[in-house]
Amino acid sequence: MFYFDPLYLIISLPALILGFIAQIKVKSAFNKYNQIPNQAGMTGAKIARTMLDSAGLYNVSIERVRGFLSDHYDPRTRKLRLSPQVFDGASIASLGVAAHECGHALQHSESYGWLKFRTWMVPTTSIGSYLGPLIFLVGFMFSIQPIAWLGVGLFSLVAVFTLITLPVEINASTRAKKWSKQYLNLDRDQQAGIKSVLDAAALTYVAAMMQAVSTLLYFVFLLTGSRRR
Ligand SMILES: [Zn+2]
Image (cartoon, rainbow, N blue to C red; front, side):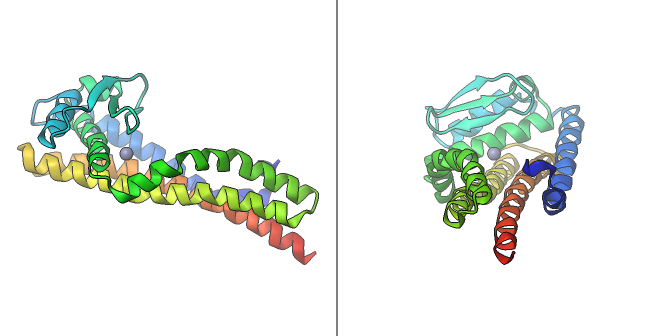
């Protein structure tokens, strides 16, 4: 029901627009730099193995996973999963994405604070994203303020989670850029290419954060508005 409220649309419009722009940017940056071979002449899988080994992370294995940009590092199993285009591709884009995911593995091995916090928040966040809006709705519909605020509180965990994701993602990209600059002999154009791919990806996380915050604002707005009546 919330998604058809014009107020919700107005509040979340900036986030929706940014999300849309971010999606386009990610796709266009990836497609552009996926056409250009990286100067190291290495596939994403090879880049990842080299970067992990250079940090002594021999125990992190690399797997091919289905999907487009489905690349991720799984801290629980210590596995780096790369999408086919990144795993097998020897482009600037596959280099950037593979190195970024390795950045997460490095964060994990160093017990990087924001990553630890983020991993710790995963279960509570999934509860908050489902139960928060539901509890809010019940409280709001039956005008039970404490219940509605409990829903808001639960959903605010989602907003916090998306906020914590930002330093984790930006740090992983910084590590990727630093490593490729130090270990691979890339010219400025190649480095700039890696940067545009990773910056576009970072924008999607900013959009997700804004989306969560605007939904939270909407809930608060409904509650404080109904209180005045
Ligand atoms: Zn990441």
